[in-house]
Amino acid sequence: MDSQEPRFAPDSAAIRINLGSLHWSSPSRAFLLTDVEEANKHLDSIQSHSVVGLDTEYKTGSGNQPREAKLCVVQIAVERRVYVLDMTAMQTCPDDLRRILEDPSIIKCGAGLNSDAQVLWTALHVNARSFRDVGHMARIAFPVYYRKVANPLSMQRCVGDILHRVMDKTDQKGDWHLGLTDTTGGRDVQKLFRYAALDAQASLEVYRVLDDCLLETAMQRKVYIPGEWLTYDCVEGKPMRIATDINDNYVEWSCNVCPWFVSGVFSNFWR
Image (cartoon, rainbow, N blue to C red):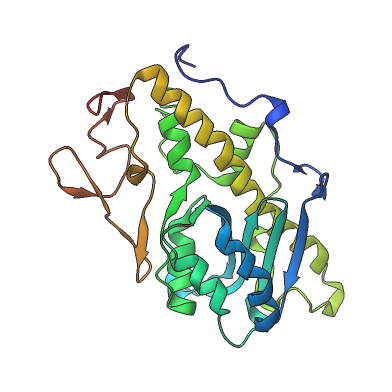
Protein backbone atom coordinates (compact mmCIF):
# COMPACT_ATOMS: atom_id res chain seq x y z
CA MET A 1 0.00 0.00 0.00
CA ASP A 2 1.20 3.50 -0.86
CA SER A 3 2.98 5.02 2.13
CA GLN A 4 1.05 8.26 1.64
CA GLU A 5 -2.31 6.59 2.03
CA PRO A 6 -3.96 6.70 5.46
CA ARG A 7 -3.61 3.50 7.43
CA PHE A 8 -6.54 1.14 7.67
CA ALA A 9 -8.49 1.45 10.89
CA PRO A 10 -6.79 -0.28 13.83
CA ASP A 11 -8.57 -3.05 15.70
CA SER A 12 -9.47 -0.59 18.45
CA ALA A 13 -11.80 1.15 15.97
CA ALA A 14 -13.64 -2.09 15.23
CA ILE A 15 -17.38 -2.40 14.94
CA ARG A 16 -19.37 -2.63 18.15
CA ILE A 17 -20.97 -5.89 17.06
CA ASN A 18 -18.89 -9.04 17.16
CA LEU A 19 -19.13 -9.77 13.43
CA GLY A 20 -17.80 -13.29 13.71
CA SER A 21 -20.32 -14.61 16.20
CA LEU A 22 -23.25 -12.31 15.43
CA HIS A 23 -23.60 -11.47 19.12
CA TRP A 24 -24.08 -7.91 20.34
CA SER A 25 -21.15 -6.78 22.46
CA SER A 26 -22.31 -3.26 23.38
CA PRO A 27 -25.40 -1.40 24.59
CA SER A 28 -26.62 -1.37 20.95
CA ARG A 29 -30.17 -2.68 20.72
CA ALA A 30 -32.07 -4.13 17.76
CA PHE A 31 -35.82 -3.75 17.40
CA LEU A 32 -38.07 -5.89 15.20
CA LEU A 33 -40.96 -3.81 13.88
CA THR A 34 -43.95 -5.55 12.32
CA ASP A 35 -46.65 -2.92 12.75
CA VAL A 36 -46.95 0.39 10.87
CA GLU A 37 -48.00 2.42 13.91
CA GLU A 38 -45.23 0.93 16.03
CA ALA A 39 -42.70 1.60 13.28
CA ASN A 40 -43.70 5.26 13.02
CA LYS A 41 -43.35 5.66 16.78
CA HIS A 42 -39.79 4.29 16.77
CA LEU A 43 -38.62 5.91 13.54
CA ASP A 44 -39.79 9.38 14.52
CA SER A 45 -36.65 9.83 16.64
CA ILE A 46 -34.39 9.24 13.62
CA GLN A 47 -35.30 12.62 12.17
CA SER A 48 -32.63 14.17 14.40
CA HIS A 49 -29.81 11.99 13.00
CA SER A 50 -27.66 13.17 10.11
CA VAL A 51 -26.39 9.70 9.07
CA VAL A 52 -28.06 6.28 9.17
CA GLY A 53 -26.95 2.85 8.04
CA LEU A 54 -29.35 1.40 5.48
CA ASP A 55 -29.91 -2.04 3.99
CA THR A 56 -32.75 -4.10 2.57
CA GLU A 57 -33.48 -7.79 2.14
CA TYR A 58 -35.60 -8.92 -0.79
CA LYS A 59 -36.63 -11.90 -2.86
CA THR A 60 -35.50 -11.63 -6.46
CA GLY A 61 -37.83 -12.46 -9.33
CA SER A 62 -37.30 -14.88 -12.17
CA GLY A 63 -34.98 -12.44 -13.94
CA ASN A 64 -32.89 -11.92 -10.79
CA GLN A 65 -33.27 -8.16 -11.24
CA PRO A 66 -33.83 -5.74 -8.30
CA ARG A 67 -36.70 -4.08 -10.19
CA GLU A 68 -38.52 -7.42 -10.22
CA ALA A 69 -37.81 -8.18 -6.57
CA LYS A 70 -40.17 -8.25 -3.61
CA LEU A 71 -39.13 -6.06 -0.69
CA CYS A 72 -39.11 -8.10 2.52
CA VAL A 73 -37.09 -6.26 5.17
CA VAL A 74 -35.73 -2.73 5.64
CA GLN A 75 -32.98 -2.10 8.20
CA ILE A 76 -31.98 1.31 9.57
CA ALA A 77 -29.13 1.79 12.05
CA VAL A 78 -28.36 4.81 14.20
CA GLU A 79 -26.17 5.25 17.27
CA ARG A 80 -26.76 2.25 19.58
CA ARG A 81 -30.02 1.24 17.87
CA VAL A 82 -30.99 -0.79 14.83
CA TYR A 83 -34.55 -0.96 13.53
CA VAL A 84 -35.50 -4.02 11.47
CA LEU A 85 -38.79 -3.52 9.65
CA ASP A 86 -40.57 -6.69 8.52
CA MET A 87 -42.28 -5.29 5.42
CA THR A 88 -44.02 -8.63 4.74
CA ALA A 89 -46.12 -7.99 7.86
CA MET A 90 -47.09 -4.40 6.94
CA GLN A 91 -49.87 -3.45 4.57
CA THR A 92 -48.45 0.01 3.82
CA CYS A 93 -45.16 1.87 4.08
CA PRO A 94 -44.75 3.66 7.44
CA ASP A 95 -44.87 7.42 6.89
CA ASP A 96 -41.73 7.99 8.92
CA LEU A 97 -39.80 5.43 6.88
CA ARG A 98 -40.76 7.29 3.71
CA ARG A 99 -39.74 10.61 5.28
CA ILE A 100 -36.33 9.27 6.30
CA LEU A 101 -35.62 7.82 2.86
CA GLU A 102 -36.69 10.99 1.04
CA ASP A 103 -35.05 13.46 3.44
CA PRO A 104 -31.95 14.94 1.74
CA SER A 105 -30.52 16.07 5.08
CA ILE A 106 -30.17 12.46 6.30
CA ILE A 107 -27.30 10.53 4.68
CA LYS A 108 -28.11 6.89 3.99
CA CYS A 109 -24.92 4.80 3.90
CA GLY A 110 -24.36 1.23 2.79
CA ALA A 111 -22.89 -0.92 0.04
CA GLY A 112 -24.51 -1.62 -3.32
CA LEU A 113 -27.28 0.86 -2.60
CA ASN A 114 -28.34 1.08 -6.25
CA SER A 115 -30.06 -2.28 -5.91
CA ASP A 116 -31.73 -1.21 -2.66
CA ALA A 117 -32.97 1.98 -4.34
CA GLN A 118 -34.53 0.02 -7.19
CA VAL A 119 -36.29 -2.34 -4.80
CA LEU A 120 -37.56 0.55 -2.66
CA TRP A 121 -38.94 2.31 -5.73
CA THR A 122 -40.68 -0.82 -7.04
CA ALA A 123 -42.23 -1.68 -3.67
CA LEU A 124 -42.90 1.72 -2.10
CA HIS A 125 -42.48 4.30 -4.91
CA VAL A 126 -39.93 6.08 -2.76
CA ASN A 127 -37.39 8.42 -4.37
CA ALA A 128 -34.59 7.87 -1.88
CA ARG A 129 -32.13 10.75 -1.46
CA SER A 130 -28.60 11.32 -0.11
CA PHE A 131 -27.08 7.87 -0.59
CA ARG A 132 -23.40 7.29 0.13
CA ASP A 133 -21.85 4.01 -0.96
CA VAL A 134 -19.05 2.92 1.38
CA GLY A 135 -17.41 1.08 -1.49
CA HIS A 136 -17.02 4.35 -3.39
CA MET A 137 -15.71 6.04 -0.26
CA ALA A 138 -13.12 3.29 0.26
CA ARG A 139 -11.83 3.72 -3.29
CA ILE A 140 -11.29 7.44 -2.76
CA ALA A 141 -9.71 6.99 0.67
CA PHE A 142 -7.35 4.23 -0.55
CA PRO A 143 -6.97 4.77 -4.32
CA VAL A 144 -3.70 2.89 -4.76
CA TYR A 145 -4.81 -0.09 -2.69
CA TYR A 146 -8.01 -0.57 -4.73
CA ARG A 147 -6.67 0.51 -8.12
CA LYS A 148 -6.65 -3.03 -9.51
CA VAL A 149 -9.99 -4.06 -8.00
CA ALA A 150 -12.49 -3.88 -10.85
CA ASN A 151 -15.67 -5.06 -9.16
CA PRO A 152 -17.74 -2.88 -6.81
CA LEU A 153 -16.60 -3.21 -3.20
CA SER A 154 -19.07 -5.26 -1.20
CA MET A 155 -19.96 -4.72 2.44
CA GLN A 156 -18.20 -7.98 3.25
CA ARG A 157 -15.01 -6.70 1.60
CA CYS A 158 -15.25 -3.31 3.34
CA VAL A 159 -15.80 -4.89 6.75
CA GLY A 160 -12.78 -7.13 6.23
CA ASP A 161 -10.48 -4.38 4.94
CA ILE A 162 -11.62 -1.45 7.05
CA LEU A 163 -12.74 -3.04 10.32
CA HIS A 164 -10.57 -6.18 10.24
CA ARG A 165 -13.53 -8.46 10.88
CA VAL A 166 -15.03 -11.43 9.08
CA MET A 167 -18.63 -10.94 7.99
CA ASP A 168 -20.70 -14.05 7.38
CA LYS A 169 -23.09 -13.48 4.46
CA THR A 170 -24.56 -17.00 4.43
CA ASP A 171 -28.06 -15.74 5.22
CA GLN A 172 -28.09 -13.12 2.47
CA LYS A 173 -30.07 -15.54 0.28
CA GLY A 174 -32.37 -16.62 3.09
CA ASP A 175 -36.12 -17.09 2.74
CA TRP A 176 -36.82 -13.45 3.55
CA HIS A 177 -40.20 -13.51 1.77
CA LEU A 178 -41.57 -15.56 4.67
CA GLY A 179 -40.92 -12.69 7.06
CA LEU A 180 -39.31 -12.64 10.49
CA THR A 181 -42.10 -14.09 12.60
CA ASP A 182 -43.02 -17.30 10.74
CA THR A 183 -41.25 -20.21 12.47
CA THR A 184 -42.97 -22.90 10.41
CA GLY A 185 -40.69 -25.82 9.69
CA GLY A 186 -38.25 -24.73 12.38
CA ARG A 187 -37.16 -21.54 10.61
CA ASP A 188 -34.50 -19.75 12.67
CA VAL A 189 -36.01 -16.27 12.44
CA GLN A 190 -33.79 -15.04 15.27
CA LYS A 191 -30.72 -15.76 13.17
CA LEU A 192 -32.18 -13.91 10.20
CA PHE A 193 -33.11 -10.99 12.45
CA ARG A 194 -29.55 -10.75 13.80
CA TYR A 195 -28.12 -10.93 10.30
CA ALA A 196 -30.39 -8.12 9.11
CA ALA A 197 -29.53 -5.90 12.07
CA LEU A 198 -25.83 -6.59 11.65
CA ASP A 199 -25.80 -5.52 8.01
CA ALA A 200 -27.20 -2.08 8.78
CA GLN A 201 -24.96 -1.57 11.82
CA ALA A 202 -21.91 -2.60 9.79
CA SER A 203 -22.81 -0.01 7.15
CA LEU A 204 -22.82 2.75 9.73
CA GLU A 205 -19.58 1.65 11.41
CA VAL A 206 -17.69 1.34 8.11
CA TYR A 207 -18.98 4.76 7.07
CA ARG A 208 -17.74 6.41 10.25
CA VAL A 209 -14.23 5.03 9.85
CA LEU A 210 -14.07 5.90 6.14
CA ASP A 211 -15.36 9.41 6.79
CA ASP A 212 -12.31 9.99 9.01
CA CYS A 213 -10.03 8.33 6.45
CA LEU A 214 -11.32 10.62 3.69
CA LEU A 215 -10.51 13.67 5.81
CA GLU A 216 -6.98 12.34 6.29
CA THR A 217 -6.66 11.62 2.56
CA ALA A 218 -7.79 15.16 1.71
CA MET A 219 -5.25 16.69 4.09
CA GLN A 220 -2.36 14.48 2.96
CA ARG A 221 -3.00 15.02 -0.75
CA LYS A 222 -4.09 18.63 -0.33
CA VAL A 223 -7.18 17.95 -2.37
CA TYR A 224 -10.73 19.10 -1.88
CA ILE A 225 -13.23 16.22 -1.72
CA PRO A 226 -16.68 17.84 -2.00
CA GLY A 227 -19.57 16.02 -0.36
CA GLU A 228 -21.63 16.02 -3.54
CA TRP A 229 -19.10 13.71 -5.17
CA LEU A 230 -19.91 11.09 -2.54
CA THR A 231 -23.67 11.60 -2.47
CA TYR A 232 -26.36 10.74 -4.97
CA ASP A 233 -30.14 10.58 -5.15
CA CYS A 234 -32.31 7.96 -6.82
CA VAL A 235 -35.30 8.89 -8.98
CA GLU A 236 -37.62 6.02 -9.89
CA GLY A 237 -34.91 3.65 -8.73
CA LYS A 238 -32.17 5.13 -10.92
CA PRO A 239 -29.15 7.14 -9.70
CA MET A 240 -29.65 10.85 -10.30
CA ARG A 241 -26.64 12.81 -11.49
CA ILE A 242 -26.44 15.60 -8.98
CA ALA A 243 -22.72 16.47 -9.02
CA THR A 244 -20.88 18.73 -11.45
CA ASP A 245 -17.34 18.49 -12.71
CA ILE A 246 -14.89 21.36 -13.27
CA ASN A 247 -16.68 22.20 -16.52
CA ASP A 248 -20.09 22.37 -14.79
CA ASN A 249 -21.26 19.19 -16.48
CA TYR A 250 -23.57 16.97 -14.47
CA VAL A 251 -21.99 13.62 -13.73
CA GLU A 252 -22.55 10.66 -11.44
CA TRP A 253 -19.44 9.98 -9.40
CA SER A 254 -17.25 7.03 -10.33
CA CYS A 255 -13.53 6.34 -10.51
CA ASN A 256 -13.81 6.48 -14.30
CA VAL A 257 -15.39 9.93 -14.73
CA CYS A 258 -14.15 11.84 -11.71
CA PRO A 259 -12.01 14.68 -13.18
CA TRP A 260 -9.79 14.92 -10.10
CA PHE A 261 -9.11 11.21 -9.70
CA VAL A 262 -7.37 9.64 -12.70
CA SER A 263 -5.49 6.32 -12.64
CA GLY A 264 -5.24 6.45 -8.87
CA VAL A 265 -3.73 9.95 -8.92
CA PHE A 266 -5.42 13.04 -7.53
CA SER A 267 -5.51 16.19 -9.66
CA ASN A 268 -7.65 19.34 -9.96
CA PHE A 269 -9.70 20.69 -7.05
CA TRP A 270 -6.46 21.60 -5.31
CA ARG A 271 -6.77 23.85 -2.34
